[in-house]
Amino acid sequence: MSTGVLIVDDSHFMRNLLRQILEQDYRIVGEASNGAEAVKMYKEHDPDVVMMDIVMPKCNGIKATAAIKKIDPDARVIMCTSVGQREKMKLAVKAGADGYVTKPFEEPSVRKALSDVVAA
Image (cartoon, rainbow, N blue to C red; front, side):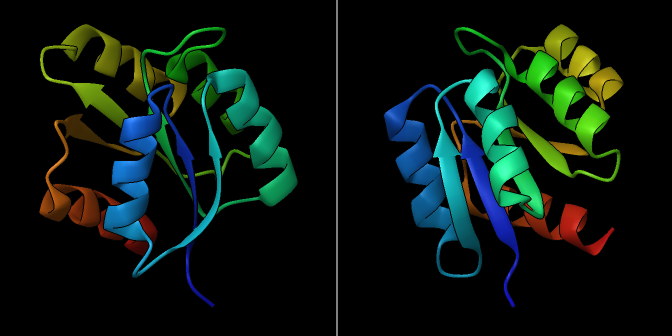
């Protein structure tokens, strides 16, 4: 069975881009457009990995990561961050993020971040 990935980003364009990069090698279990949806979908789909944007409306990726880790301490979350968001990345790691990729996404870096977290 392939690794299930939940994609979380408030940008439809970014969700599509991640889907295109990942769908050949991973099973996309769902897409969420904010952190609150991500937590709900995590409970429903139990993905192997979550690709989580940091800056989103309603509930940001840091709060959503903390909530998911509370539900499942073994959850694996990769944060998607824009260049220059070092402080937010520190908060994300504190919340339990297992890795990160920076936007704009480069296919090799997205694949490497996923394989590193899946292999861990």
